[in-house]
Length: 322
Image (cartoon, rainbow, N blue to C red; front, side):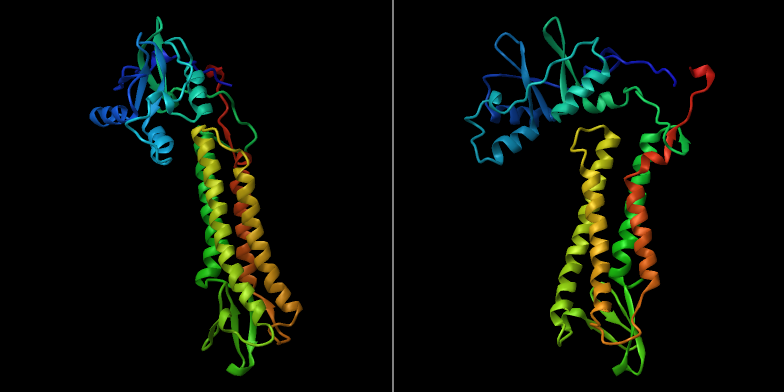
């Protein structure tokens, strides 16, 4: 593994635009100062100019505005967050970890107990050393984290297309069966309707003995789309957090996978049960092979999206880099 330099806070530009505010100031004063200076955070100091905490515009919105509290009567100390300050000799990794663990974006830099600047999580990101070399994957790349993130996005989009959009817009269906009243024409059963050469009907319009089943199928069709979109959101959330090294619930990918698989499997169980129960009342009902193939591809893409660590690995270091 190549040895990379461990950067310190002194390697960053820590004199970026920032400002301070007194611990006795009101939240309204803090908001006005942020607007005047065009900055999202202020360092809170006591009467002796000693660091007390950080107040961010996000804290004002979630801590006061959302709660319906008064901004002119509330003190900044009531909603500020506290984070251990760093020094010039603190490693960038340590500073980044402090902000990540608190889910905040700014940490103050102190020298001789006086605030001399701030470091942001964005500042630190570009100076983080690679602490590991992923050798589990098959394809060597120089930046496995970005490759994994891109691969996850691609596989998720393919899952969305093959598993949800294709049956939704009528590219493939689930079943094929002849329609006796239509001169023997074959109808394909999609997500919400059945269509043939001169035949089209929504499941919600089907009447008769099994109309409740067709209505249930239509209702689940809506849920099927919701499950797919939530699945994609959960996987995107997990992939982005992993790429940006943001601390989030690590079960996002499991949730996304479970919901995505559940939607596809239950949808197919509906249609298979229709065959077994002879709901269509024809003896030659067949599973749409194209639809089944698309669903299998969708499942493979979904599993690949959350197994991306098995695809890419970091390029091995050369002897000169050791």
